[in-house]
Amino acid sequence: MPETGPSGLADTVVSPSLAALGAAFGLSAALTLVMLRNTGRMPADRPNERSLHRRATPRGGGLAIWAGFLPVAIALPPAIGGWPLWLAAVGAVAAISFVDDLRGVPFGIRLVVHVCAAAIVAATMLPPAIAPATFALAVVVLVWGANLFNFMDGSDGLAGLMAITGFGAFAVAAALAGAGPLATICAAVAAASLPFFLANRPPASLFMGDVGSVPLGFLAAALGMAGAMLDAWPAWFAPLVFLPFLADTTVTLVRRALRREPVWRAHRGHYYQRLHAAGAGHRGTLAVWGAAMAACAALAIGCLVLAPARGGLALALALALHLIGFAAIDYHCGKTSARSP
Image 1 (tube, rainbow, N blue to C red):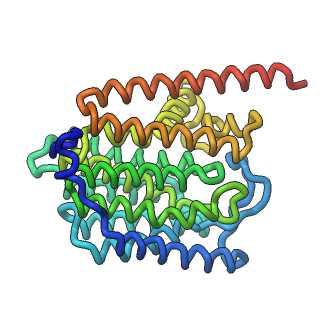
Image 2: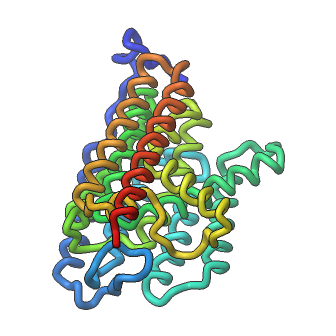
């Protein structure tokens, strides 16, 4: 990895292309405005057993993110080997997710598409002589990343802010490492996510839908691994940046599995959902999780610049603080239930 300590910082920092970022933001903003003016023609997300909203809200806003990002990603020089195949894989994940938003797609079909897309990306990213177990693990991580982001897209503003914060942190790290093309790609995702976030912040006028959340998670996992393989950042960096989503989803699903509850079925057991139900609402939940996102991104960048060897320790500390926060939510929800008639 290039020198990123204070003494070598000035020689390694590169700036993402401002023209690319402006194009990503502008294209996304344009489609977001079109969607907001034509909400009656869009699929509606109606309240169900998992949702935290009380009225039908148009979904599919994730299309604006890809309308901003994909043209820029196609026009830019490849940031990663096999980049056209990456974009095809992301496009396939987005396409099946959009169909799911429109009329529903069986879980098995969606999973097959996710696994095939993950296998394509893993094959282009990993060395040809890689062990089969390592290849399979990479596929699992990519599929888990796609579904993880989707599970967390249930409260106004959360997924959009995580995209801005997470891919923004990736862009900063890549810039510090002198990886200009990778920095621009990551920054373009963040820039394309901003207009949607402005429409999705509480009270949301537009939902992301699976077409936004699933490919975003897939791309976050893929770029996280690719950055580590390119020595743009250490292996601990991406998990620390996305820890607010990673910790909530993983702990929640482990708890459900231990209780022998069906982990694939819609539920309201995530910690962000429980905090919302305990009285925080959409604004309070976004404030708490947004603070965690900012703190994790700042900690990751700080460790990368000042003490990269301590990154693993920082990740463990951040995870411990998340677990303490989850325990506090458990305690508060338990007291609230005890007071309920």
